[in-house]
Length: 367
Ligand SMILES: *Cc1c(COP(=O)(O)O)cnc(C)c1O
Image (cartoon, rainbow, N blue to C red; front, side, top):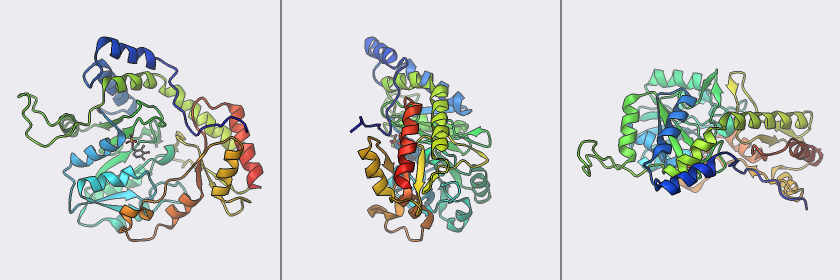
């Protein structure tokens, strides 16, 4: 068997080790230290926003975004049915109720046309997710949010640098949440970031992430806060990663184009879309296996593994999982995408020959 091509591996070939060594040698290993601020400032600029607040992971970034608006029991928050589970879990962590919306078959993102029917007097927020690197239809979503007075939290965990009509995600809604988990576009090991143009939200986020400690009186805590801080070591890795973000993103797009080329005309396979208003950064290059294919999705994944190619199935729709069985309604598009979808190897060090080998192998197996 050929050596396995993994789905993802982080590219840590820049100044990561140098900056981490600096943290260790200088003793600034906890959440004070220069790298946190440098990483925040750079990332805010990249997203075109005033504020970026570094946090311990992407899930707490989403949770804190809800807490900032006092969202809790009795409130409803709209989330897509097809997303990573954390998007729905954070709503439950606050005591609020996630309300699921099906996907748009054209973009695979939350279907804006189905959102309005799910808005009630209890709805407080929408969390659009930029899934697998493609932006959600933010124009339509912001219009609805404005009409109904809803707070918009972008879940941009998988889409650093993706654009809706030329505007980078994260800074389009009221607030945006990013993840720097090991397989995300850039990593800090574990890590997250909130970005916003709203001074008050930013100030409150900084306060709450640090145990809600008063700025004036040390160890005085006027509210119940959290420890959601990022460490200087995480930020040191993040800054080194960030220094190469442009080349990492362009490599991901090159890989996607190479996949599209090698899969063009391949029967039984639909490739990841890009809406005309979108810049997809193809976090995980993805395909759907159609009924035309000789093998179904799971059979294809097993056969690929035998050929030394690792892959991942799409997320399960939220409504199918035990904690969310109470979410009634039909989600036929999410069910279908989830049943057919595969994420292919998409890491920046993937070679063109490997992409061609994977594409050719898929075509051969499906036809
Ligand atoms: C990764 C991810 C998260 C959670 O981020 P962590 O840093 O792993 O906590 C949230 N939403 C989506 C869509 C993700 O892909």
